[in-house]
Amino acid sequence: MIVLYILLGAYLLFINIDAFALMALDKSRARRGGRRVPEATLFFLAFLGGSPGIMLAMRVFRHKTLHTSFAVGMPLICFFEAVLIAAALIYAAT
Image 1 (cartoon, helix red, strand yellow):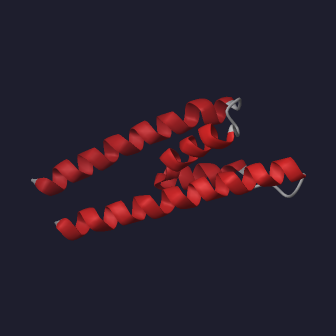
Image 2 (cartoon, rainbow, N blue to C red):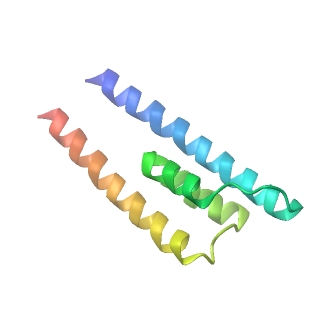
Image 3 (cartoon, helix red, strand yellow):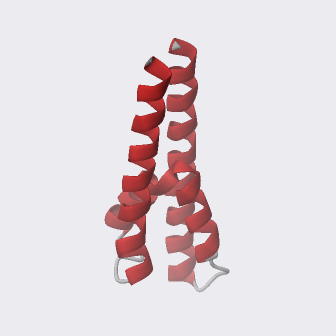
C-alpha cells in the first residue's frame, strides 16, 4: 500500500513539474514570437494530472489567465482529479 502512495506521489510530482515547465516554455515562446505549445497539449497534460502545475504557472507567469477555457477549465479539471484521487485512495484503504 505504501508503494502505491509513493508511486502516485512521484507521478503527480513529475507530471506537474512537466506541466509547469511547458507553460513556462510557452510563455517564453509567446514573448519571442516563436512556435507555441498547442493548447490541446496543455489540456492533455492537465487531464493526466498536471492541472495544479498549469494553474500555478498561470499565476506565476501571468499566462493564459484571460482565456476562459483555462481560467475555468483548469480548476474544474483539478477538482475532478482531486475527487478521483481521493476516491481511489479511500477505496484502496478498504
